[in-house]
Structures are given as structure tokens and as C-alpha cells.
Length: 376
Image (tube, rainbow, N blue to C red; front, top):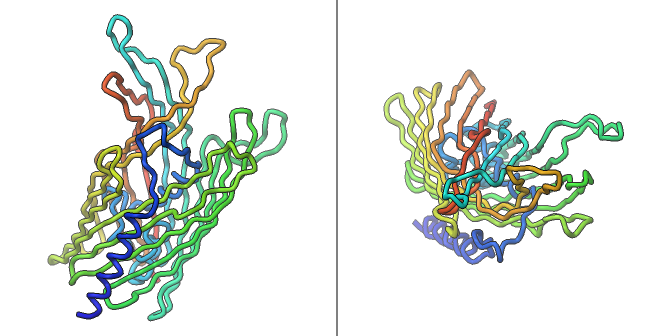
């Protein structure tokens, strides 16, 4: 009983820290601080297993998958100790239409985003009662691979990419209470409109907690991306990394040959509407699993937008707009021996529109993620 009291105090403390820690206030352009490209990268390291459950992970993440998400789950060592995540984001072309003088809607601007991908390799090494150590390497690349530039000079790289190497530690602090911390070194490369490459470097930290309640319930909270931002030589390059706090609850139960898991996460603040993830997973004899979920997330973005009717003097302008990811998520899991293979299908971020605007996505509506892990 005393342990439970202490655990509740730790949870309350972490929640209070999360509530009063400075957080971004999206949705108000005059107050928006433009974030770095690495900011979005750090929030997309979730694997196929939890993406298929609508992106819910805070209270149920475990083992190697917890690196980059909620480090408290690193301390759970009965899960796969080695995992690779691969996510593919297709080229997205979004058209925005407005009514003309005849009150007919016509396209007036266009977003055109390059295809991108994220690869993550996570490894955890348990030390028994002394906890579990985790390490990870994550990369993101955007745009077509370049072998040479316009001068014929060898490049052999992507125009924009991010790299993060991290180390984390998770421990069952007292019975039923898991805590964890993780640190990442980040290197980000972006290419401006003139073709000049800019490199920024920095650090970020995650702190998490998971509390077990009986045999079926778990609650969790994580503070993600605690950082002072990146360091670029050019001070005009966006370098901010937004802090993030997420709360979650999970329910697990075994029924005959079936294993059931349900997860629910909340991402305050809710300046642009509810940001939530909910999903369920069911496994048959631990060999074949299916997942379904629903999510809604928002992201304040400052991105180039082009007029639909291009002329010789047409120029790309920067526009500040809220982007929304909302919709149904699906996933499958297959266990073969010591290997666990997962795949998921989730919606893509789309620009939010006002009452007088209409949106038409002509290309790129879904995100596909694959994961493979091994127990040994």
C-alpha cells in the first residue's frame, strides 16, 4: 500500500511538471515560433504496431519500441529487444480552392511536398533488477536522392535529412512503477531556395512514467523533446523544437486464445481541437494480430505555397497554416518464431481550411509503416 501511495505521488509530480512546463500555443499565427525540420522528425518515430492502434502508445509501449517514444517502457524486457521501424510518407499535392467573383470555387494555391521516409534501429540490453539500457539510431530523408549538383560535383545525399542517435534507461523503480529517461543528439540538414545547405545540431530529452494498476490497467505520461533547439550558423533558419506532453491509459486482457489491448492517449493543449489517439489490438494465440484505431493530431507549419496559375514572374511564398492528421488506422501483426513483423496504414497530414476554402488532395493520402523485431 505504501508503494502505491509513493507511485501516485510520482505520477502527480510528473503531471504537474507537464502541465506547467512551457508548451507551444498553436493556432495563433502572430504567436507562432517557426519550428525546425527536426521537430516533426522527433515526433514521428512510432512503429507500425502502435500506428495501427491509432498512434496510442504512452501507457502500453514496451521494450525496444519505447526508445524515442516513452522511455519508461524500456524497462519492460519481456518484449522484443531489437526492432527496426520504416515509415514511408508519399509525395503530397494539396490544392486549395476559394470562391471567385461568380461565387464558383476555383483552385488558387498548391502545396507540393516531396516524398520522405524514416528509418529507426532500436536495441535494448536488460540488466535484471538494475534496469534496462537502450540505444537507437534514427534517420529521415526527404526529396529525391542527388548524385551530382548542377555543376557536376558529386553529392550522393538527400537535399534534406535528419539524424538522431540516442541512449535511454528504463527501470521498475518500485513494484508496478516504471520510469525512464532518454537523451538524443540531433543533426539536421536543410536546403534553402538558393540550393545552399545548412546544418544544425542540438540535443533533446524524453522523460516518462508508466504505472500499473492491477493486472489489466496501466496509465502513463511522457514529456518529449525537452530541448533548447538546434544551433545553425545562419540565425534565420528555424531552429526551435516544441516540447510535448502526452497522457495515456491502456487496458490488457487475456481471453482464452485471444489477447486484447486497448489504448487511449491525449496530447494537450487543445488550441486547434482535440488531439487524441485511440485504438485496439487483438492477437490469436500470439501468432496473428489485427489492429484498428482512430487519431486526430495537429501541426502548425510554415511552408512554401505556389499559385495554381503560374506565370513567368510567379514566386513561391511562405504560408503559416495548421495541418491536421485525422482518420482511421489499420494494422496487422505476424509472429514467426522469434521474429515479430508489423505493418500499418494511417492517414497523412492535410492542410486545414477555413469555411470559405475547399481542399482537394490530388496525390499522397496515406502513410505506410513497417516494423520487424526479434526476441532472443
